[in-house]
Length: 159
Image 1 (cartoon, one colour):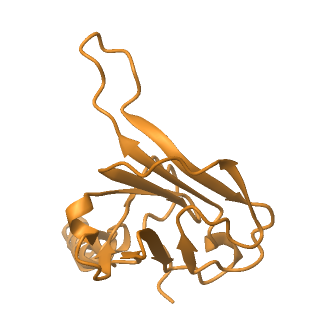
Image 2 (cartoon, rainbow, N blue to C red; image 1 turned 180 degrees about the horizontal axis):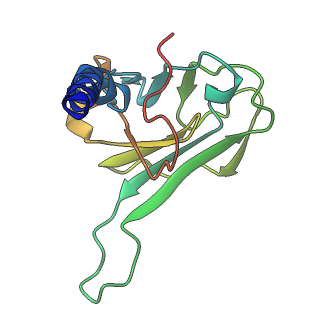
């Protein structure tokens, strides 16, 4: 009888923890906003609550179809910056303009669509943005997805 009680207690613990476990690893919040302002992409990056979650690096690339032989890259880097000292949050970045405290390691090329944006905060996230999303000038919210983040919480902190 005690095995039955222990089993039932374990089952109760597992079932009661499922909703929290299911939400814990899900990137449900739209924490990246993109907007086309004067033909420049302005990004607003949320989830920067503490030093570990501050923006460290940002890459903008276009997606290129590999040639039929299989060689070539599926993306072409258009612009990339990295933070020299991640001691403050950088909530807004205009693509092509180096934010204070960052260095540019890939100068801005011609913007070609569709683009993919990789954001490194507490780890790396990525999102593809088609030109049609921004063509009207309105801000559009996104939920970037984690890119290979072993042993890390997959959602940025909610501030």
